[in-house]
Length: 581
Image (cartoon, rainbow, N blue to C red; front, side, top):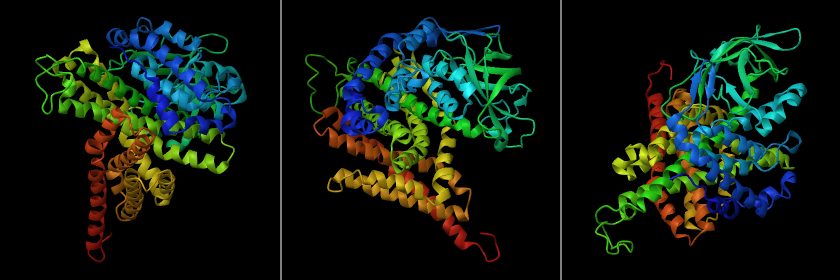
C-alpha cells in the first residue's frame, strides 16, 4: 500500500492540542491565516502527496538513480512529479511573498515535509534543503546574490545543496581543506572535494546552487577559519561552472536520491556572509535541516505504522488469548491485530508518532513566533525553545523511525523481510536519518555540553518551567509530568556539578540525558493530547501504551545519569591528598 496522509490527525493536534490558529493569528504576517485556510492547505497537500508523490516510492527504490559520465538520471516519474511540486507552489509555502513565496506559517511547511518524507523519502531529499538554503541566503547573502538566486531557491525553480563533508574530515569540520581564492572581480575560485552531497547532481532542475564550506587563503586553522561560498552549477551567463560529480554512492537505502562525490576545479563562487563566519551562516541552514530530519523520522515511522496496521487488520493467525474478539465471527483464526504482542507494537509506535508530532509542530510554531512576534521577550523564549529542543527531536525521532519501523516489520513476520509489502524499504531508508545532519551522538553532545551546561542548566530550566506552567496540577497526569519536569531540571544541575570533577562525564551520558529529555517532552505532549480528547478510544490506547511501554524508560535513563554522577562524586571524594581530583 502507498502512504496516505491523514489531515484529520494533524488538524486535531494543531487546533485542539496546540491552539495553532489563535497563536498564528496573533502574529502580524498570519493574521488572515485562519483555521479554514490552514485546513484547505492541508487537504490540498494531502491530495498531492497521496496521488502524485507516494505512487513513485517503490519504483524509485527499485530503479534508483543512474550515473553516466558525470550526469545523473532520476528514477522514472521523478522529474514530472518535481515539476508538479514546483507548479503547485509547494516549495514556496513558507517563503516570503516578496521572494516569490506564499508567506504561510512554518508549521504548515513542517506538516507538508513530514508527509512527503513518509510518502517518498528519496524524492523528498531533492527539495529537502530548499528551506535551509533560502534562510541562509536571505539572512547572510549580499544584495546581488539575493537578487540573482533567492527567488529561484524560494520557488524551487533551482535546487540547492549543503557541501560540508570531506573524505578525511567527516563531522570534524575544522579539518575542511577546500580552498577559495578571492578574485579582482569579487568572485572566488573554489578548489576541493566534498562527499555525501545529497542531490549534488541531478536532472530535476537546470541549475543547482551549492553552498560550500571552504577556507580563504589567510584563514586560521580550525572551524573559526571557515567561510561559506555560493557555487552554482551554471554561471549567470548560462555556461557550465567547473563543478563535477565524480560518482554517486551505492547505498543501503534512499536509492531514489543521488548521494554524490563532488569536485570543484577552479569553480567560480561568491562569498556568503563574512569571511571566517561560514559556520554561523551555515548553521542557519543546518538547524532548519535538523528539524526537517526529525520530521522525516516521524513521517517514516508513520509510513511503517500504516503498513503494519493495515496488515494486522487483514491477516489472521491462531486464536488470540483473552476474551473472544468481535472480529472473529466464524473464522478459525483471529486477526493478528487482536494478539497482545502485535497490539503492543502498533499502539506503542502510534504513541511515538502522536507525541513526537506534538513536540515537532510546537517547535515549528516557535519558529514563526521567533521570526514574527512583536514582543522581543516572546521571540527570545521561542528561540530558546528551538535551540534546546531541535537536537532532541532530531536524535529521538530518527532513532524511533529506524527501531520503530523494524518493530513494524515484525508484525509482518516473514512477509516483512521480502520486498512485496514495502516495509523493508522503510527500514532501510530510515537508517540514514540517524547519521546525517550530525549523528545522533553529536546531537546529544550539542544538547548537553554546548547548550545545557555552559549556564549550569538555567536556560533548559527556563524551557521546562514554561512547559510546567501549561499544566494543571489538579489533574493526576499533569501532576506526574510536573514531577518529571522538576527531576529533569535537577538532573541538569547534577551533571553540571559532576562535570567540574570529571569533564569527560557529560560526553559519556549525553545520549541518556537526551533520552530523558525526550521522554519528558513526550509525557507533556500526551498529557495535553489526553486533555484535548478524553473520549477518543484509539488515542486512549496509544496513551496507555505510552505509559506502560515507553515512559518507564525515563526512570532507567535518569538512573543511569544519576549513578554516573554519583560515581564521579565518590571517586573525587576518595582521591588521596595531593592527587589531582
